[in-house]
Every structure is written in C-alpha cells, then in structure tokens.
Amino acid sequence: MAKLSDLIISKVRVKLLKIFLADSKNMFYVRELTRSTKEEINAVRRELDHLQKAGLLKSEKRGNRLYYSVKTSFSLYPELSNLVSKSTGLGRLVLKNRSKLGFVKYAFISQKLARGLKRDPEEVDLVLIGKIIMPQVAILVKSAEKLLNTEINYSCMTEDEFNYRKNHQDPFIIKVLLQPRITLLGDEIQLLS
Image 1 (cartoon, rainbow, N blue to C red):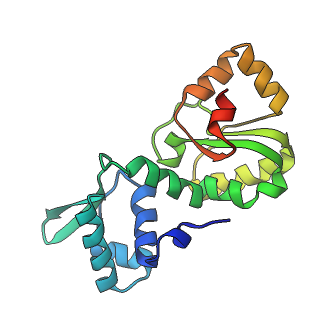
Image 2: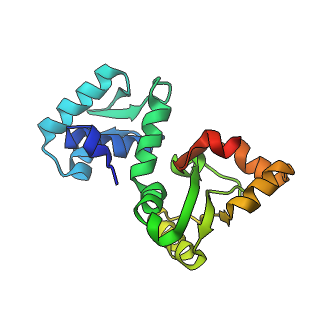
C-alpha cells in the first residue's frame, strides 16, 4: 500500500500535513507540533515556513505564541485532505485490510467523517460494495471507532444489489451517492454510470 511519505520526501512535512489536514479546525503552535511530530524544532519551523509560503497554512500571533492553522480555501486543500484521509484513520484501515474484507469492488468514506465534521446520526460513513465478509467488517469498524472515538455507520452490499437499487432510484442509495465522499477503492465513474 502506498503511503504519503512515498510521495513527499520530507518526513517532517508528511507529519505536519497529517496533523493539519486531519484536524483542520484547530490551531497549533510550534512547540506543540514539535512534541506531536517528535522532530527537531528547527525542522518543524522550516517546514511550517515552507507550507505557509506555499499558501496551505496561515499564522496568527496570540500573546507570545505563533499559532498555525490550515487554510481550507487553499486550492489543493480538498485533494490533500483526501490523500491524508486515505493514509490515516478509517481510510488507512480499509485499504490495509482490504484482502480480509472479501472482494471489495468499491469502498468510500464520508468526507464529513474524514474531516472530523459534525454528522447526522443517519448519515452513512463507510460503504463497501462487493462480496463482503461481514464479520471482518465488524471487527474493522470496531477498531476504527476506538481509533476515532466516534460511532461509525456503515453499509455493505453486493454489486448486483447496489446496481439494482441505483437503477430503481432507491432513496437510501441516492442519498449515499449525493453526500460528499472519498473513494478508497474502485473507479467513481464506473460506480455512478
């Protein structure tokens, strides 16, 4: 499985991207980031400066501390957030355990779950389509719930069931397909056609 660190050379930058993009609502100061990343302060400062010059981060002085936060208006923010979602949390667990889950043709997670946003109790966070081994999915979801400290709503179905329900405009499927999602497995164009 490819990791974000395979594409981005700086391991400090990878750690910072994961922190900022997994928790885009919060602000962080340098010492806090140094402790979280377990990296040298100068390396963290250098990468923060680089990410700020690139336009991904903004800074704000509060008292004697300089706080950094992610700019969600940054043009590549959605794509970077999706990359991080696939390499951390529920996305990482699904991709890492893909073979244990059966033959998964399509898998996607809710963007609201991935970004830590408020979700409605009836929203579906994870959808798996294919020949799914349900006990393995239950184990995976339980471990993800512990990791993320939130309840995860999921739905599994065969490809035939999904296509039948999609072709008959089943309200549940239409609602699932209209919510913002991150495709983990499968081609989204084939999924929707």
